[in-house]
Amino acid sequence: MRISRIGVGVVALAAASALVLTGCASGGSSTPTASANTSAIITTNGSEPQNPLIPTNTNETGGGKITDNIFAGLVYYDEKGAPQNDVADSITTTDSTTFTIKLKPNEKFTNGEAVTSDSFINAWQYGALLSNAQLNSYFFEDIEGFSYDADSPLTGLKKIDDTSFTVTLTAPHSDFPLRLGYTAFMPLPSVAFTDLKAFGENPIGNGPYKLASTGAWQHNVKIDLVSNPDYTGGRKPLNGGLTITFYPTADAAYADLQANNVDVIDQIPDSAYATYKTDLGDRAVNQPAAIFQSFTIPDRLAHFSGQEGQLRRQAISEAIDRATITKVIFEDTRTPASDFTSPVIDGWSDSISGSDVLKYNVDDAKKLWAEADAISPWTGTFQIAYNADGGHQGWVDAVSNNLKNNLGIDASGAPSPTFKQVRTAITDRTIQTAFRTGWQADYPGLFNFLGPIYATNAGSNDGDYSNPAFDALLAKGSQETDSATANKDYQDAQTILFKDLPAIPLWYSNVTGGFSTAVSNVHFGWNSVPLYYEITKG
Image 1 (cartoon, helix red, strand yellow):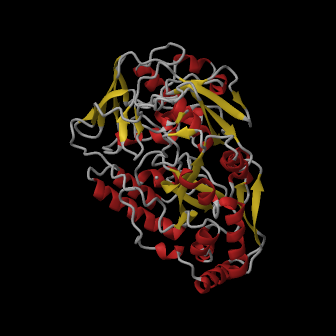
Image 2 (spheres, rainbow, N blue to C red; image 1 turned 45 degrees about the horizontal axis):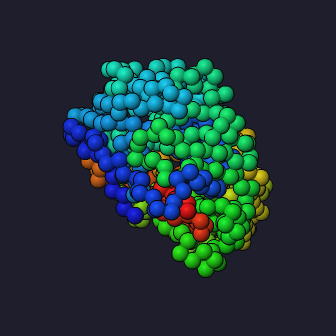
């Protein structure tokens, strides 16, 4: 999933504003140095995408890193997470229910087709339709006409002309414009709908980069992108392209960085946490990012439903020594979680009722586990599935040891070779263990850490959690016109999560990375992803 960012402060936009996003500074690109090579290819790390590169079906970091660079939506987020107009010329509303969107004229896809209102409307209609089973369909649920029960067009989308359309929501949502930089809202050219699977293998976008050629995506190896000369937005590349290599392990990527064989990486392996700052000097990166880490325990697993499951989840949470793990395993590049969101997002709180369940308390953990055993005695092994190519073994082993020592049960990690393999098992519901989860924010708002992951039927609700009271508080918050009031609703919703624990919060991640001696102007954004378009290479 899009696991994903210093006080962004843009969670909600004023509902009564007649001008929501108009003429925002294009931002982003700076002038390259005289020695910079504007045709140079920047190399970086990545992971094999789970699915063909269709924006409405891309909700994990491997595919997201690519789609966000080859497509341009209505807005994009700058380094600090503030929305900037991209294809949109303006997004306006007077009531936070109906939004009028005007596009910049003369925008086009890399095949020459014009980017029009239909490019957005048709892409969103496809993404929302139940029978298309798109992972990001949840993002359209607030638009009139959306249905979880049957195929239903988004009646809230109305074309005015080729460069303007309106979006009508089922209720006021003051943060709707803020969401529009997320992958799900990208446009598609008409050719996509002739064969979407084939299109997803060789997508045609409108962003700062494009595929270098047909077949540029070499599965499980790399993908080659080149700069798009027709892109006119604020992310105009200062380089000639981007090669994303799908490294089998974080250690392999770091070894290449040390040898100057890769330009920038956004993940330092845990084996190098103690040394990477010394190794890289001022080329080392360690900064806050909107990333939340957890592991999910589906209700369908034996012993984890009903009251018994609630007790066991709480016991497991209290049996984990987060402070020691983040210090010893992660060398303080992580911070123990105190909620389900991120400290860099406006509205975050470390004092939500029920959050004591995240404190290390061995005696209480044993007591809770015994209470669960009185309902139904524990049998079996507790396992946490994870992708071996992501540098997770250290913390999974440490958590497993906590559970073995503190609860007296057999616990271990269950590795899969690649991120794609474990994600496929998770999304098709064949996985029969707990599993590593995390969230890299799609847009800088508290709701984004809650709704897509824990709301009933949400696209990234991998544990199939459902609680009507939680859903109701989410709905209430999303309809508030005042951001502080909305954030209070989201905090209240988390009190329910602390009782049910559909996922066990672990820690917040800093982005740890580095860059080679060959590149300059390297900046990492609020969501932990490098701003590739700004990087220059001499």
